[in-house]
Image (spheres, helix red, strand yellow):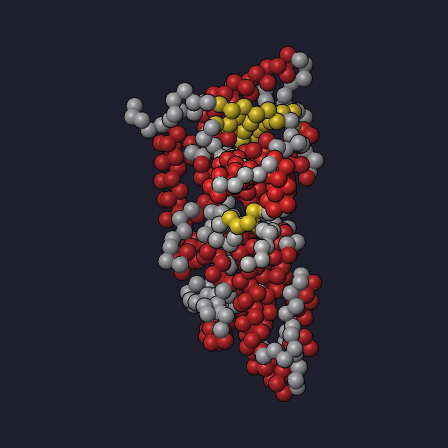
Length: 496
């Protein structure tokens, strides 16, 4: 057989299947007409919240309630975040200021009113919400056109902070551009945006403004994810291929792992660090901890390889998990031993607990690798839950799990806003280690002082050297400029 692995062949089959599915789905939707019953509304719900679509269009929970357009759970999630609230209320104000421009202009100029005293034209609840979140939007003697420019300028620092609410498989720049009017920091730029909005208002979703050139043939672009993302990408001269992300998979995947944990008594968790995303895995454990379900876990086997992500250290530092960490080394550079090591350690734990009269009844395998199927098949005494990533698992493995009624769960869909904090922590820790190990560890101030003394032909006694260090050197600190260069602070000043 050639050097291609069985796993890579399966991945090729899956990619071909997904591409075929993606190419044929639009025609299928067209033939059926209207909404497809399996289309998701997660992304459109997030965009709808941020651009300021009325709360009444959000349902109760993620079920159909009087046919709501958007998920109420998404509304509640984002409404807990200050940055998301700021963006939402700024967008609400921009829509209202554009929609009611002439009437507001008349009130402000004829009756000498400000926008905080025109409740029938300007939503006072948005002004109050912004004030509560630290943005004093209303100012004295401010022109209406300047207020619209203010919206753009306030959005500039806050929109990027909402990236955490959009999954990383969606191109964030395409979403971000929806909030920024071209030349939005100028009156002329906003006048052009207002002209487009005024002429095509009914083509904007729910008459809510965003940076968009509407097409009469598009209809409601926020109908569902399967409609929105392909159109969004097309407007950016790109193509969205992975329709599997925006439609229900049509399989037996669990919606949430909570029920599995509730029904288990003693759970063994096995994590393949080579075939799982650390951010998503840690998000799962945070969710289980919040539900009080981590106590069901007997042990977490974390088997790592020297080539995997350093972000796994964040999980290793957890004090709330009975974690056993094992790092494998490689006999050959191109061949990992993680799957073999994890299988052996798993079976040893299973056997030991059985011999001690306290058997493991349930197990979770966190990996998209089908190499663990023999372990599942040959251990029928255990009820398994497989946590995997949709794009990293072969179609054949999906089919095998479904045919054998093995529960599985897509960790891709378990979006955790805390992932951004995890990534920040991981990057920051590595940056600190890099600075300390590669730069500060070789820096010795006494060596520098002695080199300077030798160069100048001067000498200091040990007492003079200590006093000099304490008075002048010890008080200084290192800081970093915006361009990344290091600078000394608290330097002693000398008279010239």
